[in-house]
Image (cartoon, rainbow, N blue to C red; front, side, top):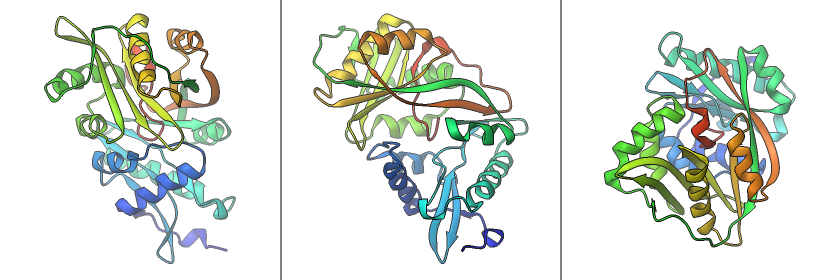
Length: 287
């Protein structure tokens, strides 16, 4: 039996983040094959956990976006060591550390599985909306000529567009997210103006779209079809905020099947975002 009282919070190196993502794969969370590299580049100081005899036994993200907004994700205790109080101690230490990493009164987000939501609520988080994961099978379809890949010269416009949907600047994350191996990026443009974008990447089982942001349902559908085009015959997953009923309509139109759900939760004030533009969130791990 491990002495929970003697466990000390330690910063993880990149190998530690890789281990957490491997555990996430074993949990069936279906992470991307290159997710850990992007996560690490986003905030190398944003991952902490517990070690026992130099072996990682539990960990999670405490990522800061320019000290303006934080996100707690990738929270995992090794399956052999659960129900001992390790996770509870780790979670509260991570929450308190992230509060210190941020500006005063900055908000923190997370996506909580249903079973853990009461625990997170006791820790000061409030549910903003439900996220549901849907699975569709990729197939070839014609798409709008307004769709094109994201290029380097598009980045500044994409950064600005993303703020309206995420709520805060996250350039470092996006630069790495857009350039991941085994991924495809798409933007929808009219008159040199970006009206939506999407990323699809290879994950452990199939492919996952995230984010899918668009000004309206028609644009969202064209981006969704573009992503499905790249994964013909494979499972394609999309995590939608059910508060946006147009996102629900989109997955229903393509006969996507419900997989599971989380809830987007916030400690402090929920960010001001254009929820009607969010057809698919980026990740459950970093927001």
